[in-house]
Length: 252
Image 1 (tube, rainbow, N blue to C red):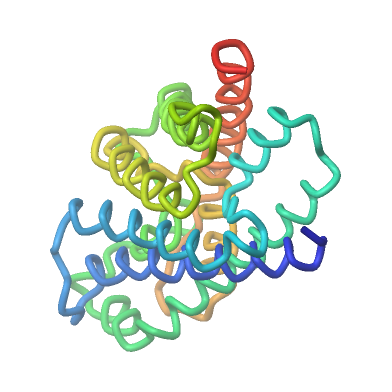
Image 2 (cartoon, rainbow, N blue to C red; image 1 turned 60 degrees about the horizontal axis):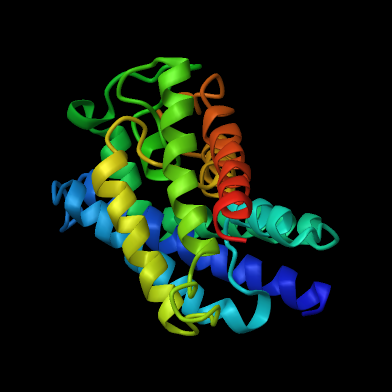
């Protein structure tokens, strides 16, 4: 794969991932959305289907990492780091594009939610604003070590599942079936481990949309919670590296 294919594939794939994943969060959260209040099951399955769609769309271009933690895990496993910056750049840009498209698609709902006194809530300068959850993750209980550990654990499961795909078939890959299995893994992580932090398990998925939240001209949007922002970046990267270490010791 050329660097241009990797960058293009990761940009498109991550944009689609965030458009559909952030889209389900907007649908469930925002006032005057037909899906408002659909709940956690809708969010977890929405993100799973988002992963499946993005993977199938761009696997032929870039391998569809769509996640810096996956890129780090594969780089450690294979010992090849040359294309890592290209993957990271495409993933971050794609995540920002996807988040901006969610804003466009739900523009009226954002305005309705943020101008209604019943739904806009407080507008803190530093803490999470009332619609930040559409863009990025946040903890239900703020406990630094627990929040970090939750992201590490969830991402370790995800990346180890990616790295071990096909090992039960004499070392052969799963081909197109891999995207579906990865999607189900994401749903499983969301259902089982998403409760404490909202399961970022992907630095680009959290950081790119958080930047967009900070930049968008949303009324009464409040803060972007930058004090928490390092956890959904560091935790998944640690988890990706840990998964690669487990793979090397147990499966290689």
